[in-house]
Image (cartoon, rainbow, N blue to C red):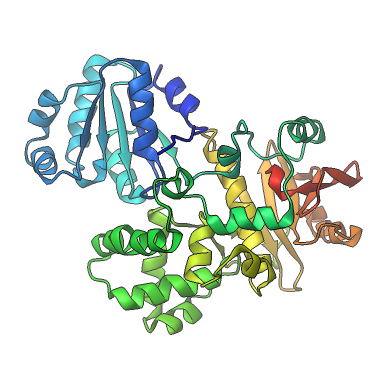
Length: 409
């Protein structure tokens, strides 16, 4: 198996110089433990690795957390720490006593459940990071850069990123971004995703929502995948899965908690009062979406009815990853009002908003950017906008409206 360098490595090492504890969350199989074990080997401090997937270790951590930490002294890497929230209080005591940077590296795959324990015991003492599956920059071996519409920065980036064709981009989208597949550890993509759903996702959903009907859950997540890049329609998804809307909302919240999906919330303010309030649904891994919706090959996905939605999901998830891999919180929204005016993505940064439109075309029409005028009443200044598309190179309509290839994200 080939180790793929993760962009978050430098962020973890830098934070370890000043923070006594680092908590890395994210979905199972995203590569959290692999990366931290690689970094532990490099730092050469003899950092011990303990997994709470081991039931005997978990039992000790839950019943006698003080003894657990005496046996496994810092520096230590504790994997799947959400199984023993009792540890947080004793980690806090140790941190307050020693103030030693880099003492605890923690991982967990149940984000909100972890956050409650962190807020109660480790507030102000732990650096929080979220790891998604691989980004296309990591797969290509290109340095990370949080997405921007700064033309000078994009011009520099275009010199180091190898252009790819539309079929190559859809192949990347269809193959997905799970490290187990990308590294060559697993070779059968369909078996991998089927096992991933049954072994990890269903188990975690069952733990967080008590009981779950496996067949209904598969119908639920398949229906959600078919609506990727769309407004969340709880009723339609619930009807497809033969569940009630309360269960549907609960399961969707669990998928968000597990880092499988994320929601893009609408951009609105006191001036823009006619905006739609419903969030849009995206998956972090478009390979999982293609598996669930039965697109059998990249060529079929590119020609199929979902091609535009898949491309939008891919572009938005890649933008999210560039910020997360830099240890930064992405402020991404979308715009849609009751007059059917829509903007796919709005990036908010440094007191400005940057409207972005995502199109499958290689030659976007200039009329696309006229829709950005609906934001003229917004209190924040509109920065450089962009159409993200299948173009083969970086270009522009004018100095305020760029044409950015999706492979550059």
